[in-house]
Image (cartoon, helix red, strand yellow):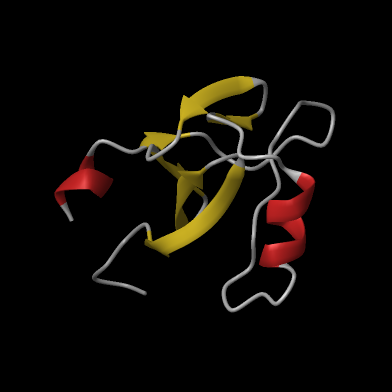
Length: 81
């Protein structure tokens, strides 16, 4: 859990700001998203950039930047999934 401890709390995505696609858990369209995002070295969340491998907290979820796509990485509070 140590990588989650320092995840920046970014809040909810603002539709007015640049946010990279967020894949849903077990989403068949994740591969489609990967084709649309050509291996970007960063992800954006509300106009702020994060390097691949970075974790952020958005609501009750932890997201991981994976080459331009946010991938669910687990609950923000592991004691209350």
